[in-house]
Image 1 (spheres, rainbow, N blue to C red):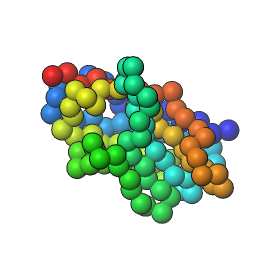
Image 2: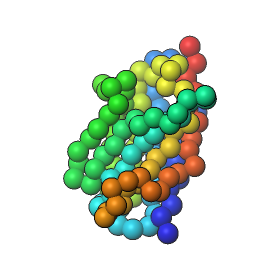
Image 3: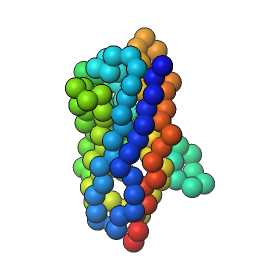
Length: 118
């Protein structure tokens, strides 16, 4: 049984920082590609960042240079460091796991709210 639980969301002023964490339990974490997604009110869910098991990183253009995804395989945790936050970053952020041999994010956490005030 794979479970994901996010933490670290909250209210922050524009220009501030937050670090989100996603604790993973289940199959071998080090072989899993982890992603972060977000959904703002009235909008579709959007890809934010991903980190493959081999260390490759991917970001949506709007967060490049501001957000950093990382993982600690010893702690079965993936992080999203968010700097220089903007009001348009306000959303519910969810982590997701892509577990081999499938090539899709089949497991999701419940999400954590990030609110950036102007």
